[in-house]
Image 1 (cartoon, helix red, strand yellow):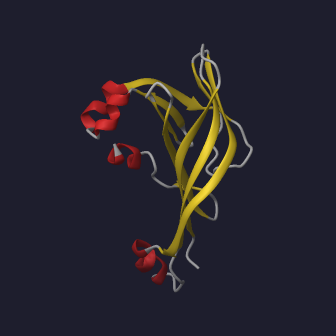
Image 2: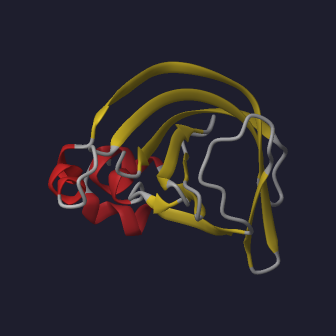
Length: 155
């Protein structure tokens, strides 16, 4: 499960550095929601077993983002589509659970070659409650644990 989710969190170019995020949580019926800047997936509870082989079998629905947003915005709605089906995800509240900053070790030699300081990273863990509206289902509040990763350019 963690490996599958981590593969979705590869940093994306964001102008002055790289930034990405991913969120995961459960619906009341035990289905899981996985949300990244590019897609929203609904998977069955079997994915919780942690076996990557079950990931493709567990995928129930997948939606592509209508816009790419590489930051978890406080009040910005996210929309996803799969053909004519639409999904909306609207942040209702968020709480920061932790933050870690430091030098991005892998970038030290890259930056030293340009006589610049190392890249800095910030990893932030959030708990965000979203209002999720799936096709043919009543909109529900779903708490998701979100991981946001930002890495700067060489200083």
